[in-house]
Amino acid sequence: MTQSNNNNNRNHTPIGSLREYVPAGISHADKEDSAEAEPASALPPWQRVQIARHPERPHALDYISRLCDDFVEMHGDRLYGDDAAIVGGLAQFEGQTVMLLGEQKGRNTKENIQRNFGMPQPEGYRKAERLMHHAARFGFPIIAFIDTPGASPGVQSEERGIGQAIAQNLLVMLETAVPFIVTVIGEGGSGGALAIGVGDRILMLENSTYSVASPEAAAAILWRDASQASTAAVSMHITAPDLLDYGVIDEIIPEPEGGAHADPTAALDAVRDAIARHLSDLQTRFDVDTPVGARRLLEARRAKFRNMGRFIDTDEPSVSE
Image 1 (cartoon, rainbow, N blue to C red):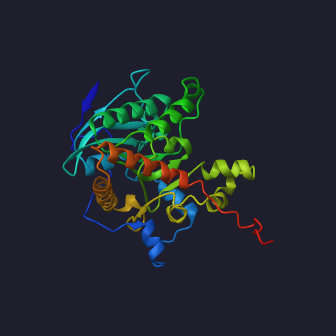
Image 2: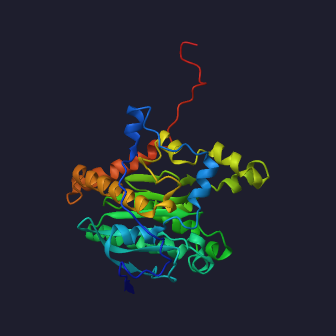
Image 3: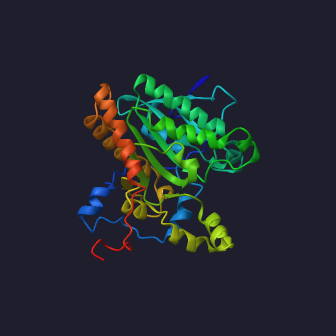
């Protein structure tokens, strides 16, 4: 079952007036080349967490409607049902057909209930898996938007195999030989984010977060006191500048002063420009229409994530000692 959506007729609340804004991004290479390549604002981590959670911040469907034309939303996992916390489908981006995936939050209580507060169920991830297979079959690049506190933690999710669904997606993403670009637009929570986040390029908006757990959950575990969340946010290094330093992400996309919700077009157009630039670069580097190009793309993607687990033990004694 598919449903065609017109860009001027969305089933979510509009985010207000828009104006033109096209900033340049900050890449990992820029950070290495220049000590002055820091984002304009230097907000503390806990304040960035609050901005990332702001209810008026642009959500996945806002980006899809601004960035793409002729979006056709695709529903269901062909096993259980449809999960409104994950949206996906085909669209035209910069003159070519792409597959879109996004974790969608609501903007009010009714929408949040419909979207399960942006926390996908197993059928949501299986829908994403189905759409990734579809993209691979026809050679469509994949563009994903991460914005979730985490996967749905309820008993029903466990009964329907949430862990297996996430693990299966990780495997599929490492075997899908099409350009895959991921953008963290709000919260990137745990495996719920990673389940659509194993891409060739990982971008983050300046005030978004990406972490293994929420600061409140980490504080409750470490100090048995959720009120220590602001301290946990600092210790966890969950902000875009930290993750760029560690090589987990590839570029920081600057936001307007006050956050993406303060000037939505600024954020939307900046994301469009960054995605278009990285997609063009991937398609230039890797000719995925050939077996050799497809293999090189997958090898580079796998190496990217393997390198994230490397470390140097500086306390190990030298051979001479």
